[in-house]
Amino acid sequence: MTYLPKYGPQAQTPQQRARILVQMKAANPVLYKDLPPALEQLHARYIAGELSWTDVCYLREQEQAR
Image (tube, rainbow, N blue to C red):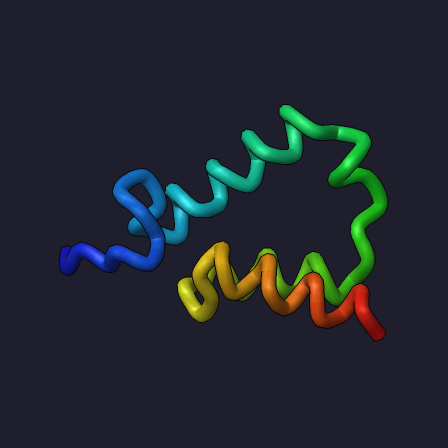
């Protein structure tokens, strides 16, 4: 497996990225309750490896600015 620095050491595989999202949602249930479909899609793209977490945050901010 090739190391991809944009994901960090604990988020190299889709399974690891999914686990991180589960942990984030468990730690912040109010923040992650009833997410809009657009944000759920960004999370899915992060898990799939299409986006880094930095990309997700940037795109989320762009969406909220509209």
